[in-house]
Length: 258
Image (cartoon, rainbow, N blue to C red; front, side):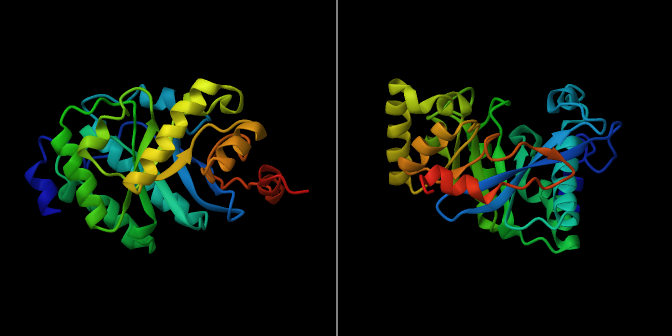
């Protein structure tokens, strides 16, 4: 990887192995209108069932870049081994990407090795990391999209994933944070806010996915207001090293069919 070699010292020796191991859990992404699982999000977990937080606690400035690269590769390889279909959504750390064309090489190599089309990759910009350089983020998003991959702004509406980011970037997807989703069916203020986000996304030609859907009431309100793509415990919880199923009956229940 010549491009990566140029930034070898800056990017924390991203070709060296990590000093700890981890695995991936998968959670379905569902489309209620089409009654199907259209993809999976890969979520980091410890090899002994530890939470994502416990794994991330071991990530610091010395191994941030290696960890980001390792997550991408492991997600692709494991999704392939599990015969996952549809989209594979992977969280990524913008500050762990020094130069998009160079830092994507390990990801592209893994996808090519297992035959995973890049058009079935979506990279989620996580809200856990403050974006220090908007122009850099803009360059990452544009570069990934030019390669045929999708990008998503995760946890939209809270934390660092705020409205002003849309001034600089045009992601393919906005994933609505669970704080806006939780209890939406009985929360007028949340409904008003989310209604405006729905209008905004439509005008900007950006797709919406609701995260953290935990009840049928939430799922129904979201579906009836135009958000057919959802994710959350009500459909299926993440499962380590497996592809959890979403019962077909859930789709009909949300649509109000008997």
